[in-house]
Length: 236
Image (cartoon, rainbow, N blue to C red; front, side):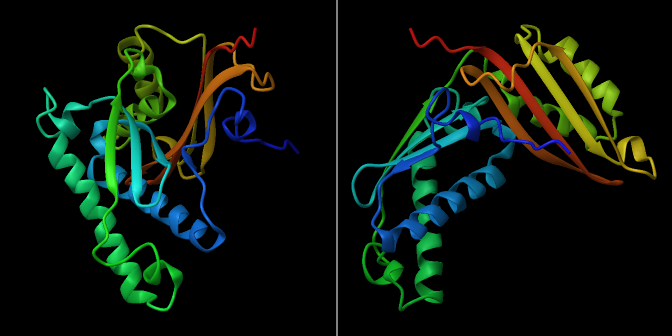
């Protein structure tokens, strides 16, 4: 029986870095961890059509938050010329305030409410958007594209063909797509996959992007996994 290893977790510290970078005391570690998870989940729900690739969160000092957002369509977040950047920043602060008030009301005796996360305390947030020209070849972007077609009741083969012909005009060196579930409404669930190019999963210096998402169809949930081989990292 094959043992699967997460391709990003395997490469942490080599070609990949942690999405959250900060140091916390033991009593505050879980608070920061849950807050980061809540913030990402809320942004994915409210601005899911923006095409998030990843959200990095850095905390250098107490109550100071820096966010680096990699997104395919930044105009949905901040407008065409960035005129809504301040509004988006305030929206993030409101999300954090809502979360901290909720934690304060449910767990008043914890260190969460008594020390660093007071009711009227809001972190100084800096939002930085980094946009790459080849962002449409990221694993997350490809998965979102397939989800959009599958939820419109396209067959999985048609969705993959449209992806390869129209979206991926500049194809990456390697690509693998796996879709599992009740494909095309079949009564028995199965797994189908396609691979283009090379995909050196066991090469640690290979820069491989990975994404796992779900498509909600009328036949049930379809699981989508995407691996994208981008390049080989040179340490010399």
